[in-house]
Image 1 (tube, rainbow, N blue to C red):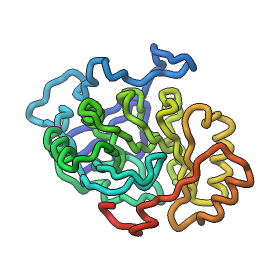
Image 2: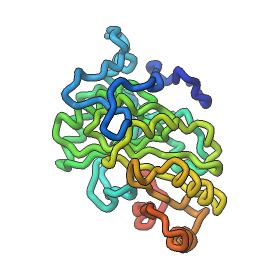
Image 3: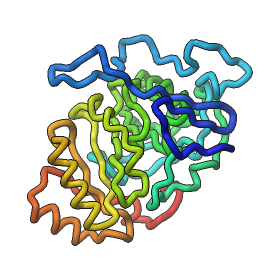
Image 4: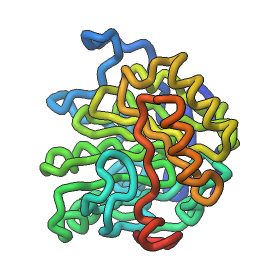
Length: 275
């Protein structure tokens, strides 16, 4: 398996069973009242992850199957949905290698499954909140169709994404939780700032902070890019690197318009898989 760690203007990520390609968003022809580029409306024709080509011999390449690391049921540990019972769909693969990554097992592990099987397993839990995560879920072209199908089925859907791949083609009904990578992550150069043009108040922007220096950098980005006017902003301490008390004190001192979050699942269960 080939891992691509540099994301050029035309992303091409090789993955087992198929090639995932995501074109970065160009200047949008659809603008909101705020001048931001709109995402794909749910009444628009479904995004064709196969770029208009049929590939019946390779369902993953055609977008009708995805490589799944795990599907599990737990409490949401992050974002404004924290604490809600949620079904998690974790996709395999990620082009980034953040220093604090806690799901490195999702880089390669997983099995290719038909879209219908994935939807059936999600439905078996009887829960209406679903989080699609990774790895980097958008690295698989079929993720766009998965998100659309989940929304069509009536789920409240959130997407956890690294911020390194364009979200312009994500269904507008999905709440995108978009990371902004800090210098301490080791992947700050992968931030795709154009993604901010496709976010709304229903989405969220997240910083994972590894140090006081990361915090100060994030505060600069918060103000320079007026992030709080785009979407709710989350400041999260990197587990075991920044204390809850320190981050809380910094946010209170600086009177920031952000939400501090901790990873609730780690507070409850520690660093374990499937929670």
